[in-house]
Each structure stands twice: as C-alpha cells, then as structure tokens.
Image 1 (spheres, rainbow, N blue to C red):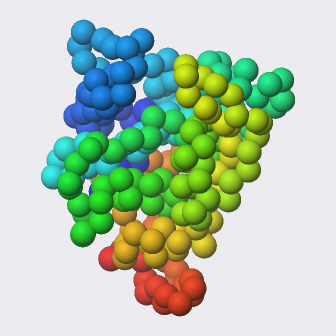
Image 2: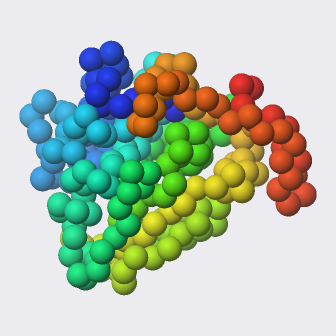
Length: 233
C-alpha cells in the first residue's frame, strides 16, 4: 500500500528509499528519457530530496511499484528554483500546508491491489494522504492531459498561469485542492473500498511527531453510491 515517509526518517526506512531512488531512475530516466538525470549507480536523486521532502512509495509484495513526492512550498522546490518562468512573473501560492506535487508515476504493469490498477491506487493515495495529514493544496506543474484527469477525479483545480512549452511539451502550473468529496469520487470511479495508506509502516506526519490517524467517516453519500466506513478496512 502507499507508505508515507519523511526524508528526515530516511535512516529508519533506508531499504524502501533505496528502492525509491532506483525506481525513479528506471521510470524517469530509462522509461521517459530524462537523460540529464542519468547516473552510473542507477539512482535518481535531486537537490530537493532533503529532510523536508515527503515520499509516497506504493509498495506491493515488498517492491516499490509507484511513487509520488511532496515538497513544502516554504522551502526551495521545483517551481521556485527550476521553473519560476512558468509563472510569467506572477507569484504562486506558498504556505505551511501547501506542498508541491512532483515525481508522480506508476510502473507499466498489470499489477492490481484488490482488483484496482496500481496507478489508480497511487492517485487515490495522494489525495487521502493530503486529507489525513492536513495538507490544504498542492502546486503542480503538469501536462493539460493530467489537469483534465485531476478535474474529472474530484480535485479542485485552479490554473496559476497560461500553459508554456517546456522541453517540447505543453506545461501548465496549477493548484489542486483535496476534499472529502474528491476522495469519494476516486473511490466511486476506481471501485476502491477502504484506506489505501500504510500508516503503520511509516506515518509521515509533516506537522509534528504524533502518528497520523485514518479517516473515520461513515455512510458518506456521493451520487447514487453509499460508502460504508473506509478507514481500517
């Protein structure tokens, strides 16, 4: 399931994070051709993988099969230090509970969890984690196709600037806000019942030492579907 690891806890989760670096290299360098990030050791790590980074690896049978990273916007992140030109001089949201969503990818695979494709579990897990951790919004620099996906799966999306061409691709900066209605939309679309977070493995609380708690809502109405308790299934 989706683990939640703060890079400050890297020593306690060294085995999974080593898999993360290798997974990122396979997916972004070998699969997608990010040659600037190719390394002889087959590990993709950048300057933002510091103590403030939140790693969300999707683990199936002990293997990382999907991944997302969240970066605090009050610290250096991609939009602030690498792609500020995407904003065309405008400012972007910053705050203690606003994070940047980066490096989101699932392997090309037929693997499923409870019959649900791993890519759908990954996207659902990111929203659930935001709600559990108290993250209010995500800043994303992404393709218009993914913007459409986020809108249709229940994220509250707001463009921050006009699309720009970046390395031959059209990229638009946006904010994506999670909501309980959005999480229910994910569950409805993907046929998910229950939490997809592995909070026992690594609770990943960016706002304090206390363990994160699962959502405990019951009988939420969404469209024509009645959802029973999702937490602790």
